[in-house]
Amino acid sequence: MDNNDILIRLRYALDIKDQDMIEIFKLGGVDMTKEEVQKVLTKSVDEDEEYDDEAYEDEDHIKCTNSMLESFLNGFITFKRGPQPSKPGQPNKPDRSIKNYSSVNNVMLKKVKIALKLTNEDVIDILEAADVKITKGELSGLLRKEGHKNYRQFGDQYARNFLKGLTIKYRG
Image (tube, rainbow, N blue to C red; front, side):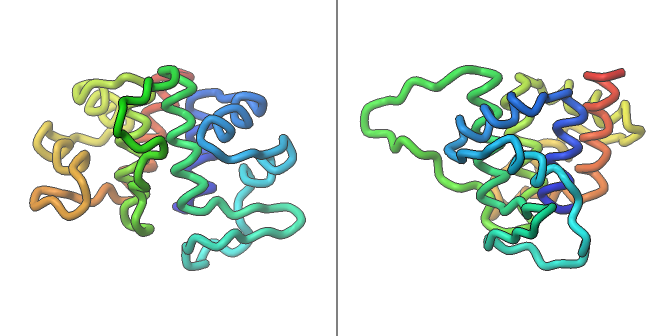
């Protein structure tokens, strides 16, 4: 599952309109036009490409890079919860959480959980709606920082089922 697919599924699950997508990207620090957003929300022709942070574009598709996805997720938090007041001595821009492709799903889970004000029980219920059983301990490992001894990778199948569960909860 690539970053474009995550955006497509997230947009569908939460019924986010084009204008809201533009606003969310802007809140995350990425200026996009409606046409660019629509090109990001299309599937790539070559699904076997390696994911790097270089922008890939053709006339019908814009590849969503890790930094673009993270900017969207940060903007989504701001869009749903409002801007966070800055504290003195704190940097304005948050550190990038997506270090490589393997951490994309974990970061997506954490940031969607924050944006939608979901509790751990809510996340477990969302996954159960998609027929996935997970314990609080397993969920805790998925929400850890990469490098922590109890960190567990949130695989593509879990991510698909999480987004499917969001669709069931918010559109069902």
